[in-house]
Image 1 (cartoon, rainbow, N blue to C red):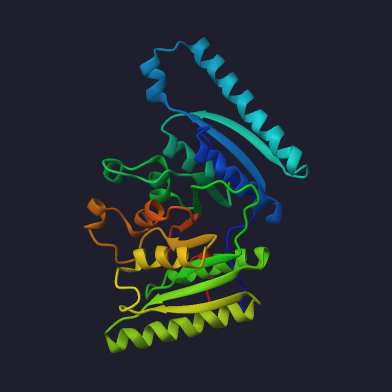
Image 2 (image 1 turned 60 degrees about the vertical axis):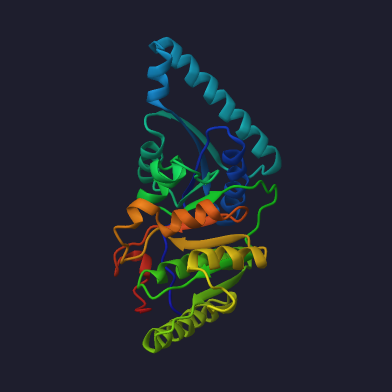
Length: 300
């Protein structure tokens, strides 16, 4: 059986700004931590720009840090009431939130980042929300959560597969989650009018199915044809996820052949995160081919 190689389970990082959406992410993180025997770290980042705008002196900043730490500890206590075996850490840092989040994730060797997002609208689609910025540069998978679920599960996971070699890395993570949650993986692929591309798509689909069979993960397949799903893969993914009431969408943060236009209209990953109204989205930054995340299986 082919080994699935993903980062070692250690810590799930949960950035909190105390908004409803950031608190929603906590429930997902603690449930994942219990299944994978991870710790979770609740992180609040005090924005230096806000501190400068408030003209706080050192003692006032120290008092603010204490108040935030106390608030984090209250959330920790609430979690331990429901999940008494959970291992929860709290941490307060200062700086630009998205930079600090990624630095802490690297320093702590985090397994993943789970954070809330409201999605970006209007000007935010160009300037980028904190979650979008974390997704762009994170080397760790980021799960973006919007809606609250007190007992979150990943029973149905939507897994879009394309022709890029890095798509295999999503399959590794789908196996990892599928085994723990007893999920059904919904493999979706967009049909292509080009005959050669069509053959490659079907070949990749067969290989993906073989990996899930090897690891005992339930799956179904769906080919998105233009008649039923006339829009691009991003919209097709969200539409299909809504139709099956999916619990998670798994995507790469960008394709190997990302176009310069993406810098102006937003990446495929950001479009899916911003447009998925209720389904959490797991974004995986592709590793170089041949690195640990591909498992060395020669999927493509």
